[in-house]
Amino acid sequence: MHATAKVNGTVIADTDSYEIVEGNVYFPPSSLTKSFFSGPTDQHSHCPWKGDASYYNISVDGTELKNAAWFYPETFEKAKHIKDFVAFYTSKVTVEKD
Image 1 (spheres, rainbow, N blue to C red):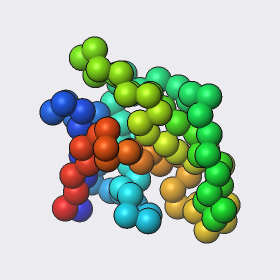
Image 2: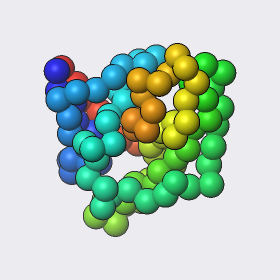
Image 3: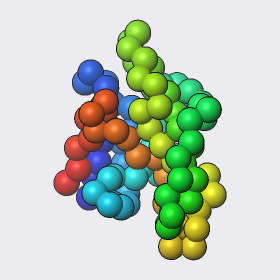
Image 4: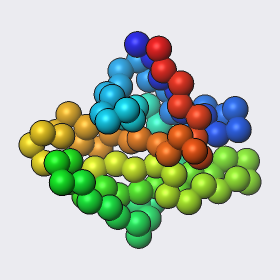
């Protein structure tokens, strides 16, 4: 079980342990290359069963992707397994898993 997240071919997250929720790959915080991430931003959203999401911007080689990744700093009980894990908008970031 392996997953990577890439922007323009640059790996920004890489892990052998991830969670799949609603079709999204959630990467553990330790798998991120933190230098590509900034935030959390002012963007927030709410999921009725996961909680309130916060967002990161991603910058790679001059390309800035606003609010391209999200995470749940506090979760409801059913989503405890993804607390602080990061997922990506696949329209902005290439996510590959096996």
